Structure formats: structure tokens, C-alpha cells
Image 1 (spheres, rainbow, N blue to C red):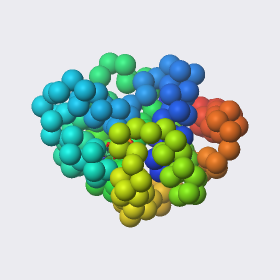
Image 2 (image 1 turned 30 degrees about the horizontal axis):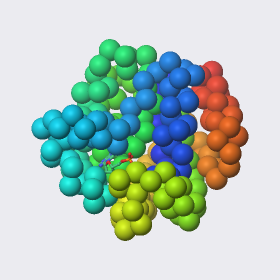
Image 3 (image 1 turned 45 degrees about the horizontal axis):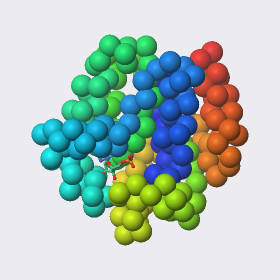
Image 4 (image 1 turned 135 degrees about the vertical axis):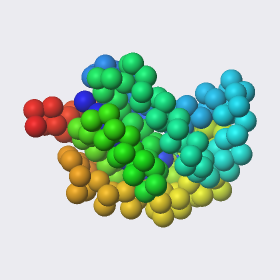
Length: 187
Ligand code: AMP
């Protein structure tokens, strides 16, 4: 099961991706978590990306794509994965298409979690991460609309695309995701 989860930050992607990963025993691959881990361990990558995360700007595609390429090549991703936070723009989406084609795999399902900006903003403020200040949140929402939202069109015509209304209790959202995954599994 190769799952891609799209949606603005604050849509509940991380929470839902973690549940999918547990339920289907596949790794949860979240670029944001990987960058934060790199920063915490003060690695070369961490030092490179720290200003981008602090300001809520997208990390350059080269760094992000090579991180994902390496991660998808690891053993635990052989039987599937749930991607959260990648791709964030068309260049990354095209790189992912190529990577998957190279290894003869496709996306089983693309879940698009949708919530209004006001809800996304409120949820980000409530979780209170270092980069969840009002200015940085706004910067990320602008990037989402300009760069990530066009991906909905990219995926709408490819594979199994499922819009999910995310402004509801976590369990309801997850139940709908499970239905979509069950349908994808038998397709
Ligand atoms: P997230 O945890 O998904 O909210 O991501 C936190 C931050 O990591 C973002 O604001 C970006 O600076 C960076 N980031 C995460 N994923 C990507 C990506 N696919 N492309 C570029 N930057 C990313």
C-alpha cells in the first residue's frame, strides 16, 4: 500500500499518517519530521535546513528529493509507505513520479485532506511548534496555496484520488480514510 497524504499544515496529516502507518504496518515518511530530526542531531543536513524551517520556507528541492529518494530505497519501505509533507510542489511531484517509475511502483491512493485556512491556522497555533508563530504560519499557508494546491490537479487524473473533509473529529476522518484504503486494496 503506497499512500500519499496531501493537505495544508494543520489539516491533521501527521496524526492520520501515523494511524495509517500503525494500521497497515508501513513506515510513516514525513519530510518535516526528518528535517527536524536532522536539526536535532546537528547533522550537515540539519545545519543546511535550519533557516528554512525557522522561516517557514520550503527547503530546496534538491535536498528534499534526495532525502526522499534515499528513504524510499530503505528496506522497510519495500512493501509500502505513507508519505506526509512530500511532495510540496510540482518539481517534487514529478521527481516522485520518476522515482516510483524507476522502481516499478505506483501510488495506491492519494488522500487530499481538506480544511479551511482558518481551521488550519487555529490548529497550528494550538500545537505550538517553534515554527508555529502567526507570521511563519501565514508564510506556509501562502506556499501551500501557491505551490502545493496545484498538485491536487496533478493527482486528480492519476491513480486513486480521494478528497477527505478534514474539519471533523479525528476518528471520523480516519474511518473515511480506512474506507478509501480498503477500496484501494481491492482495486
Ligand atoms: P511540516 O512538518 O510538514 O509542517 O514541515 C515543516 C517544515 O519543513 C516546512 O515549513 C518546510 O520548511 C520543511 N519541509 C517539510 N517538507 C518539505 C518539502 N517537501 N519540501 C520543502 N520543505 C519541506
